Image (cartoon, rainbow, N blue to C red; front, side):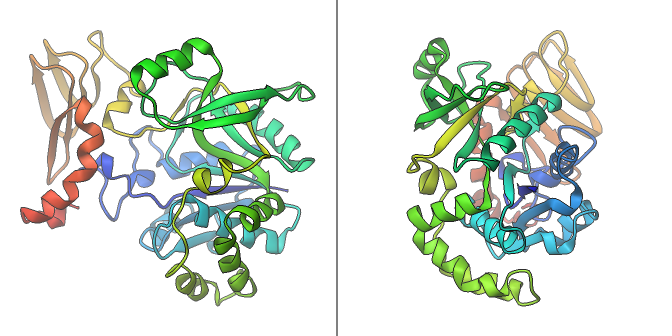
Length: 357
């Protein structure tokens, strides 16, 4: 059976002031009228029913996730005491699912990405499921680049796997860190690189063996609480284990070390919606490439992103700005500064605005 594992523990601090401690990015309606976590869950419903969808989040967001997705069993909403990056999150889900279904195949999805071409996504997912079911591959989704993007990691393609006909799959030659612009342009021209999406498909048993080989400390931690998983003792067991468990990403911990890593080519109109500036590629734009929501009037302005649902915002003679209005805070910054918004947390505390976090 195919199970959906949705990772929903991030705080999304780059979307302040709309995102707050009690309302992280995955619970925002910034892309559509649905929260991002609900959109992610509904996206896979043609292949995976709600009873086979698991949400891994943090204790701080667990109740909000339950309210947002009441169709998901409370036993399938798993709360980490604190974030420990993606490897422990994925290990916990894999051991928990494998205990009840040893033959399970898992698709791992971040809760806060946009996929505009859902039909193409489901086609890729079906192929990945078929391949993972009958092989020991660790499959990652590689996004066909639309531009020389410097904000994403890349996957260098190795030898193509010719026996797969419905979609193109390749052995992973290497995982590449976020490049500078010149390097990103070269990757695009060469055509041998895909964006690293952070989406995966594999058998639960395959990823568990990979943890045993490459991250044995996490494997031992999960084995120690295995008797408590899927019982009333699970929350306390997880809490104790997470006090000492290693914090590491699945890419660093396993994918970059594995000889079984392959990538499936995914042309699915994907966007990780990583900051306010990324909404320029998501929201409708006017003739001057302003992307606006709410009560916004742009005059002699261009290339701006603005959200003002509460009051009229007039943009006069400005360019490349982000303006976000909320009832208790207003953000104005250059589009190039959007990645720095996460650093505002400490500054707000220093100036007595802790209640705005």
